[in-house]
Structures are given as structure tokens and as C-alpha cells.
Amino acid sequence: MYKPLPNGLEIAASITHGMGLFASDKFDAGHNFGTCHIDMEGDLIRTPLGGWINHSEEPNCEKQANAYIIEKEGKKIFFKRYNLVAIKDIKAGEELTLEYTFYKID
Image (tube, rainbow, N blue to C red):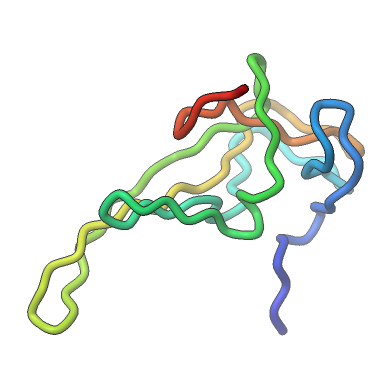
């Protein structure tokens, strides 16, 4: 069964900005929530997980990248997959945040 978000996460109103990604369960530092962004030859794709993360100067998560090469129709395609990983313990009810590095904040 398809689920747009991992278990223990939900989208709710945020005091940071509009809607945000919140923990409905407790998560320990080091927990890998899954893929939040994909950079395919300069095209940035946000997954449902990545689409709801708000920026913070003191984030509780970070993006961790893995680089890949796939071959399609004889052409090599380079891409990076970024996973959202907790860098602090996260309590139930706490918003997951990330320091934005792909684009500027207005």
C-alpha cells in the first residue's frame, strides 16, 4: 500500500510557515526518515516527505546524500538522493526542520 509519508509523521499547521512536517511518535537522533529530495543532473525533485519540511537556523534534521549513476538507452545519468535524517532526538508533536541549502529563503 502506498503511503506518501513514513509512519510516525504527519502534516499540520506550523508556526514557522504555513504547514509543516510533524512527528506523531518519538524518534532518536540518527533516525533515517527516507528520501526527501533527488537531484537529477541539476533538476531538483522534492518527494512528498521533502515537500513539507520547513527551514530553521537550528534544525533537528539534515539531508544526507548518496550519489548514483544509472544507464538509460546507452547514456549515463548522474543523480543524488538525499535522505532526511534526525540530528537530534525528536519528541512526539515536534516539527521536523531542516536548514535549507538548495535555495534562498525570502
